[in-house]
Amino acid sequence: MAGITKELAEKIARKLNADIHKGKRHDIAKIFHGGKMVASFGIRRGSRRDQGHNYISGQIFVSQPQAKMLGECPLSRDEWIQILREKGKI
Image (cartoon, rainbow, N blue to C red):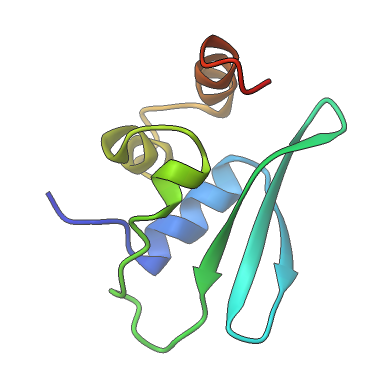
């Protein structure tokens, strides 16, 4: 199973309606629910689009396969919110 690429990381950020904040080396995706930030992760801005972003799954409190499913569409934002509720993160 291939890891999370920059392209997939950007798709995850869009799917979760993240606010993107530009940094020097990374863009920071901040995800809010109910007016509170519930998760954030960095997206490398390097030229290598295949550079790994496998750390994202831990930062959004899901497994690696679930993180990939967010970017590839089988898992919705609402389902992700439910996972966070079940884990006591929100």
